[in-house]
Length: 405
Image 1 (tube, rainbow, N blue to C red):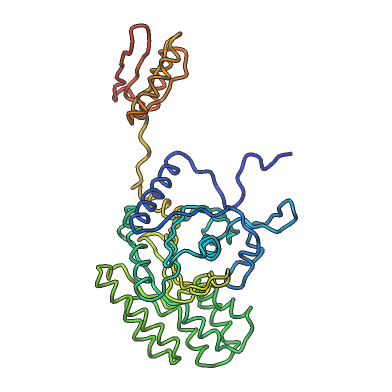
Image 2 (spheres, helix red, strand yellow; image 1 turned 90 degrees about the vertical axis):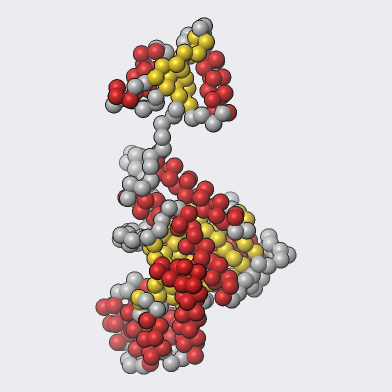
């Protein structure tokens, strides 16, 4: 009976104290950055109609979604992604808004992840969407903002890997096979599972597209891989994409991000709505993706307002784990003051807490009946000042650091 009452569901966990403070701090820093660049905050519902995500471009299999029904029997899902709902908002609620539309978000997403992927079923994302803006300037703005977002969070040893979704899409379209096989090939390239990729491609026979797809996961590294790619790709779309990635990399280097950029032409993303440049960010010493984004020019049109768009999301949970592992995220400090009211002066103690709080002093109201208990509590909690409220007014006791345990 109630055997699951004391645990959390798979892919979720409780967040306590310092972890919560760190996540809030990261979200506040990112929000300040996004607002300073002209982005306005939006918040979409935690659950949406299934129709929002029931589309080929979403890349979400129904079995990976958390589903439910409303009181009318209509199918709902917990939000597995922020970009699709924001595209919906831009195409409907903001239909008459002049483009470009700059939006940002801080919200949770929910999707069933592979238990061995390292990803959670519930996670928090902060990001931007630049809707109604195509071309190089918009792509550069979003990538530079992603770099600045990591820097704002105190991360300097990051790498941004840049690719182009159009390369895979063009090559996959040339294959003489079904959509299920194309999806498997995409997954193998995304995870760089070379053995499975080669086995699947071998079954399709020899062709220029097969050879190029087999090479995609190896086209990773410095901008020199672009030269190698030009020798492998003969199609106009692939060669144009390679040239465009090279142009962006050159201009990012001119901005001062050259040492942060790597090329990954095998970067395809699991979401199928991406159409152009895509990128992903990592921090040194960790395999967790901390930022991910790219261009999705056709998505808003699926909701009734065609417009080119691009954006990215910062994975708050992954970034927090990196910072906590480095011990670079300080635990929240204890309250500065513990306020204790003697018998008959309980309301005065509460009023004193209100006064201190109004002045920006972090304080805690002591709920114990005796002063000895108040002293002991202050020592355990590392609170250095105890204020005692009585008929004599306010008396202050300093809890010496050397006596603290």
